[in-house]
Amino acid sequence: MDESCYWNQKTFAIVTGASRGIGRTLAEKISKQMGADSVLLLISRDEKDLDSLQKAIETDRPSVRVHVGVTDLSSCDESALNGVVSSALAGESAESFAHALCVHNAGSLGDATKRCTDLVSVNSCVQYFQLNLASVVVLNAIFLRRFASSLSPVQQRKTVVNMSSLCGVEPFSSLSLYCTGKAGRDMFFKVLAKEEPDVRVLNYAPGPVETNMRTQLLHQSWTEEIKSGGLGLTTEMTCDRLMAILAGDSYASGAHVDYYDP
Ligand SMILES: NC(=O)c1ccc[n+]([C@@H]2O[C@H](COP(=O)([O-])OP(=O)(O)OC[C@H]3O[C@@H](n4cnc5c(N)ncnc54)[C@H](OP(=O)(O)O)[C@@H]3O)[C@@H](O)[C@H]2O)c1
Image (cartoon, rainbow, N blue to C red):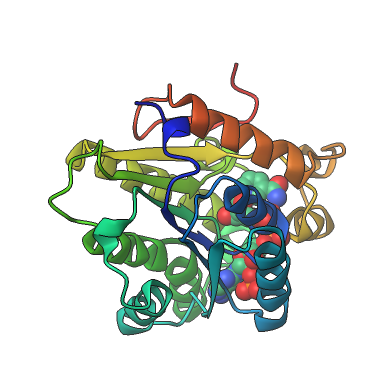
């Protein structure tokens, strides 16, 4: 059964980094594909932006319950992440959902003014990888353990999306931490796909997208290779592409799929 068969059924979905940019647009698009009594958990640090998104979605889709989980993924621990997921479930049985989806989208660029030889603070490196790698690994485990039921993959579909980047497969000067984090995430989700054949795992590279992150990149980076990049995609374009890839369901689990792939 392809992924599109699971849309419009009762779904539990998590989108991290939902306050703005790609995550916000994606959360809106996912909400439109959710069936009655679905739950959508929105995570980021910005309560005001998450609240406004919650209101917009609940107006558009009254049958979807939206839960706001204000969390700093660069400093929270496992009990905070567990707490956010538990509050969103609000006592509902994980087995009552036909589809469980987790989109690991939150991320940061790091300081793109720096070269590899400028990275002399252990604390800054640890904090960077806590947001961009460690919190992803742990939230993912919490999510899959919650939905580790006796249901077959046909009775309950589980999907995990990692928001990846071309930087996860190609090195770019000025982006050492970013490239390293994205490469690490991709490999983590490739291993997950191997260990958990019943979970559909996608590493999606969204292309260059006009968001705060891209503005920061063009402003900070000192390399021509990056500075000469033209206008990027809109969040609509890349999220539509991701939704189509998920619905088509023809990707190999664990694969890295780029917006520009045929
Ligand atoms: N834009 C591009 O060209 C591009 C290209 C390739 C890949 N990507 C990837 O796409 C994803 C989304 O990027 P974007 O361009 O939409 O970036 P963005 O506009 O900067 O949004 C980043 C999101 O991550 C959240 N976030 C940042 N730090 C956080 C923290 N400490 N705790 C919790 N949430 C945090 C932000 O929310 P708060 O500030 O509210 O916490 C925001 O919602 C990222 O993983 C990025 O690497 C982007």
